[in-house]
Length: 464
Image 1 (cartoon, rainbow, N blue to C red):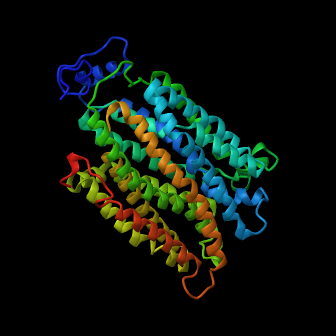
Image 2 (cartoon, one colour):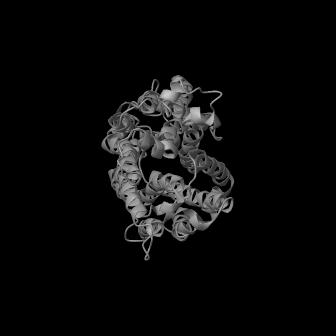
Image 3 (tube, one colour):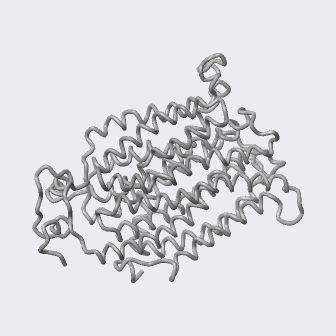
């Protein structure tokens, strides 16, 4: 123990030493004086994550129609191919910069990175809605991913604004907000895209939204993000402006745990990203190609219902499951059930309305709650393994590795989806069945990574 070191009391529960003018010390003092749950800070974090996450998936319900209207695809079967590259461009940008943004956050503070990220959401979300060429759609998504470096530093920030006994709640909050954003984003996109067709009395054909049919959902996200950006004026910085000494061997151990837990997160996020991209394409494609012939509004409704279920589950059910089973066993059970669930998607295409809608809602609720269970459990493991001065960089590194795989997931998903549609009428494993079979295989690989020797478990969870 380094109890004699000047900076150690900041991290150990002994007599605290606070330095005047240090924002990190000011936060530590507040936590000492107010041991309760910091609801105000948690709500602020929740809104920041939501604003950051909304544009990530808001395009999926209308991407099929957007690619069609850009006249880049020569045939209907090629739409999925080009849609995959638009989805991948965001993740490619995030892959290239996430670790760097984490390092910046550990050097100059979490707040500047968060502010820049929100500004990029406001600007590039609106520009994406104004895209009239394929290259513009790809480039605006790439720039959004490159400059929005919030997700890594905000995980570190969530841990640092609360006491250790509230860390699980903080990380659960981050995962919940992110998951709800991934659901609300497509809901906004599904309901508000092509408004001149859906709401002709409110949006005439000759209006701005007639010329840019996909601007409205993107503009709404920018408008929502603007007051969130302004509110960051009152966002307290948590980074210390002086050195805090910690044990080097602890840092080395934490780095090993970071990589092993990140592997689990990456494996599952490959499946979830590909599935989210494929789900909208599959649901909106014609039944003769193995789809459901859903409209973008139908898809938005499914995802809205799923979003409500996540909020209820994460608030009232997930904490109790973690308390009983622990994060590792909880992840394993959720992954196992996800594999089984994926085999139920293809038969849904043989159901008629309203049974197909009911079945899709049930499957979406289960799949997304399994996802939030796995992701939150993995981040609980990771963030309890890393030291404070490495936290933003570690989360940025995790985001980089996740984004690297997610870069190829939408493209691969789009290519596989187009291939599956072209072999829909073969006798052995028709396209829709093959599609979800491949997703189940990837999910199964993620389950294997939760066992030794692949997963290095932190000491506090070693009995799990």
